[in-house]
Length: 323
Image (tube, helix red, strand yellow):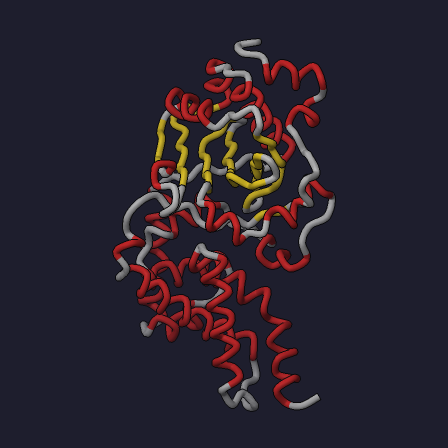
């Protein structure tokens, strides 16, 4: 094994961690992969023989790469308009009994889509300080050189970010996944049955739905607030041909929806106090295609909601206003 092969092997030991850092910094799987690739290129061109802590060196490199990417993103007008739902981290374990090994680092201590959405509102340096300190436990002495500030200034960046995150009052999901799943199942049963009353009953009065259709479906992009309006919106996507595949999305209850074997939506839910407080729906066909969902779901295997609920409940889910 030559020196480059040994270096590549050492890099692979840290790839999962680097991708997890980059995803939390960027909220995009594609951009996270680009950042990790750039980190490898920088490593391969550097003399790291005297580096005692390769993990720390690589974390610094990936952080600086992400910081530059965030700054460049803020200068692109197309990224400042419209509704944006971050790329979802999908765990198939609830549906298949087996997770994806390559996703383990991303799924560990998963950060919900709601928090990633809030992080998108932070200034780049604030986001870096918050993510590395609050989510990855780096010290401000370590963070300071990444942002070109003193440790005290880095602490202030994280503190400002923390205040902004808290000010937005992101709901805390119920800890019990079974409770989350039961509420989400009830949501889809009511939607399929056209039962607005039952829909409103499982929604928090101040629920927020964010739907991102991307450039290909701008008409699908929307931010809808309030139980009644979200319930009416839910009836629009409750198509009879839709198949609901239960998954975890960023560590909480979610679904992949397919029609004729084609993914049309990934939805992540925040269930708090046994009601749905937030819904994040990605319906951008281009981004859905890059998630490679048909292969991962083993389509055309059918995981219809009716099969999960049983014949009686499934029939009620299809009968208008049955409750």
